[in-house]
Length: 251
Image (tube, one colour):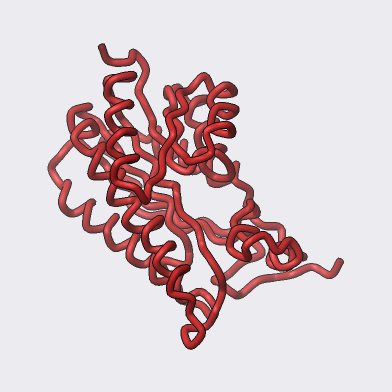
């Protein structure tokens, strides 16, 4: 039996933009299915939102298949997919590229998005009014020094999202892309592999976006009338004019 509320699936939902998006979508009337590897944190967010926590590793075919099967068996529907799982690793120049980091970024940001979208697309089509929202990045629009690996992955993710939009034309599924600029979450801490000083320096003197700012945008896009497709949004703080063009206040 299908769930009575519209069902939104959010990947990478254990923290940051994913967790904030789950909260915003729950407030907007969705039953939220939260997917990520850290089940303990997922369950905390699920408890807050009245949602459903299901473990998910977007880099593993078997995990994605089991996740999609669980969504179908437990909820019976999927109306919205928020492809949020992603992230950056390192900031090395191309000459010193760590190929393991590049492979990991590609697998999470690009192939992970493909895996989950492919697995849930039948349910989104069957809903009669489905939607895919992919959380991209300014890095997918604008290359910058030290960002080659992440730039490459996010450009690829943007390309696949835009192709999906073309492929689904005439079908009852909207496809949207939200590209944030600087958002202060644990993004930089992960990128610099736990180096708190490096992570703090990224945001020093800048009033960055918050996860909630992006989540509010996700909920707004998700609640437009079904004939309205918000194709792309570039969302940046006032203190940022381009990927590496920032206004920093003196401390």
